[in-house]
Length: 304
Length: 198
Image 1 (cartoon, each protein chain N blue to C red):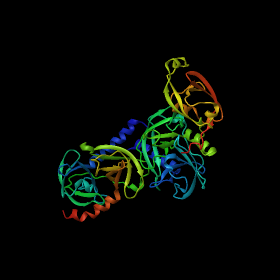
Image 2: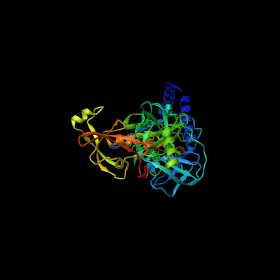
Image 3: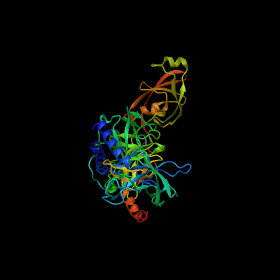
Image 4: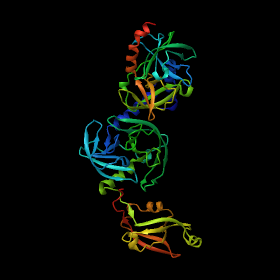
């Protein structure tokens, strides 16, 4: 009796046990510890928002031993943080490729909000394209989960029934809806955190606000659009200030990519633009104009 | 692994659990329906001889008697012979004609992530099944990621072989907490002198 059910149950328990060896407890906040994953030798990945202090961080490994850890860096955009442990063991984690993400997959969310491993069972309820979080982070796939959020959910791994890691769970990127940052994004962000201590972000040094364009000008733009970004503050020593952007200019495009909300501009200002020239399309004193600026790097990285 | 085979397996276990799960009513105003499990008094007890029902103390409250509803619709008055609020356990004795008893499992063997099933009477729906997994290994309570509701109290939590590993007692932060079988065994044995005197 119960052979198919037992097989599924055994798979889930085996997946939890196998990946559970890599799930650690992180003491970097009050009350309960948060969860993290030993992603590769000596490196633990977790959810950035659960790290509430940057010193005196202690990690408890699956075998119960503890180790002090240093914060390598954090990226609020993707809610990821990396920690370095004195103890190095484990090798690279067994991750599933992005193509393996399927709606309807049974998944486990593992955590360790203390000494014991915890597990929750759920489904991948939706898989979407690459998206940008409201903090400006780029995530390679939207993974929406139908799963219960318990203590230690954020920072723990999302695991499929075969024991492959699909991503890092977090409850804060999708307004409280459980989601996971795909493993491919984790690898990309981790590489930047290890190199720079943060994820480099482009910087113009202006404050912007959406405004409606005069109808005649709106029609003369190609493609036509009715909203631009008025410059409401300029850092005179910033990249835009040095490039000649003036207070009251209305930015309509960066390198011919239309921008009508500050988030559009943030989306354009990724790490690849840092140090490169960009042409800003403007409306200045009622006339179309353009200014070329050299995109800088956001001071202090993404730390906040 | 086919969905139909999975449903068959779940159905078989649900049927077996339904035969050993009872409804418990105290008749009090505002009191809902609780569940209970027909529990073997001692190891190797012959099937069809059950007369001890285990439930939660909060299901029977302060009552000394309650109405026990068996699978198939028969009801009988049961006597509450022992109740402990701290452990949230109670033993109810019935006359016990031909009652099948639960197959008891060992919660120490449960692995985090393995599937578990709960049976209860959520909001008066008799003998409904819920599926979940073991959330954490804990000696005092079995923590299960399973969606329970009022009416599951006192009902069985079982593994995928249909063995009852505990009885569901409460919902905390969305998790189901069950009293583990060994604690129930000890509680039932401690109640035995009272049952012999009946």
